[in-house]
Length: 469
Ligand code: HEM
Ligand code: 2DC
Image 1 (cartoon, helix red, strand yellow):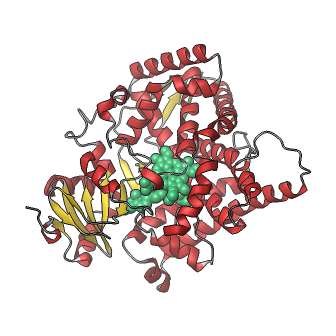
Image 2 (cartoon, rainbow, N blue to C red):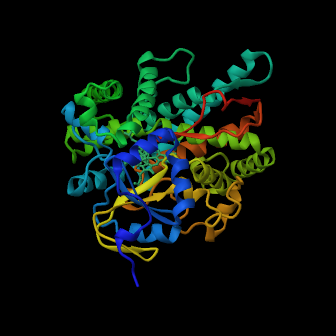
């Protein structure tokens, strides 16, 4: 006998009271731990309402499979109102991230070919490899200058630059020069704006931005300032390429980048291209850099594993005779390490879909149109899903039984992360070069916790310091 929707356990009767309690728990920064706690209290399914944000939450891979089978042809995530409100306020077009329905699908199908198809890897790899080599050269220089044969630093700033340089090299087919000593202050401002944009988004998940705007709240003003900075910088980059393209006289160099390819293809309007390329540029900074930061932190804590990975990379280098595209096919443990990082430290706490038809999960009926969330952070740490979840063990991903609806760091299906191929390749190439050149060590052995600022970040900057030698 299937039980009705109204019997799903949880706190969903008074959104305002729940918001107050959530706020008292510092929930804006603890969302991931609160979700984990809720699964402990209520079991593998619970219903929730905080402010105006209402959802059904699930944790099991089998249930994730049911959810994604019901996502329909136009999969729709939770609408992040702060982001759509900004676009509406400034009269800017939505890109692929924020579009829905047929409009989303049209853009996405065209973008897939240029951004996420495997065919594009041969274009991306040389660009990303150059950036990786420059990063290594920069670290060598820092080590030399230190006079101590090692470099201890807060790596997140370095990784932000690496990530922006990488994604820009693919989008624009050009280097920004962020691996140099003196960098463009506008690029640094862009990086700071992205961090501010994410940070100011999370309170607005629960309190409507329209309301905050009316009362002139600081969080809304900061959010607008952050997006303004992001769009201005992206506009400059896009204009630059657009101008070059019009001056060029048919001479086709190697690969011109995603933006130029889209302009030449002429299937999307210029405004649509601008909107999506801006989202790609903004989406490509904190996501990969934080994942790499967590990976270096785990490698520093596990020196034996670090040696194992180094051996795999050395063997891959020898077997592929330096052909990077081929080398990427010979590093399963490095890939496992990245999956393991995203299991314990996912960028996205949850994946969500408005389901397109009625489903039954954990014997409860859930009607079409409901927002169903898979608790990705909670699932990654659930001992019923992963054997000894607290252990960082890349080799677990070499077994096929680990795979079924468990490796979901980039989402799933046609609405999964559009930047996935870029992100994976960029991170793999980074680890290859770092492992070939340096040893990574940790100053103190402290457990670094995550904090939720729309994406999950390492708590307290500075506690993530590592030594490269
Ligand atoms: C969407 C994760 C890097 C651009 C997403 C989603 C996740 C995700 C979970 C939602 C997927 C879903 O709902 O099924 C990650 C992780 C990254 C990463 C873990 C790196 C470690 C990037 C990069 C870019 C990017 C580098 C840009 C180059 C996007 C875009 C979307 C998206 C545009 C929206 C796609 C759509 O709605 O059709 N990402 N991402 N992401 N990501 Fe990423
Ligand atoms: C945050 O409860 C928690 O990839 C919310 O590159 C539900 C939610 C909805 C959408 C998710 C978001 C969470 C986390 C950050 C994600 C976002 C969709 C895309 C975005 C996962 C889980 C991200 C980081 C994009 C951002 C691109 C943007 C800056 C242009």
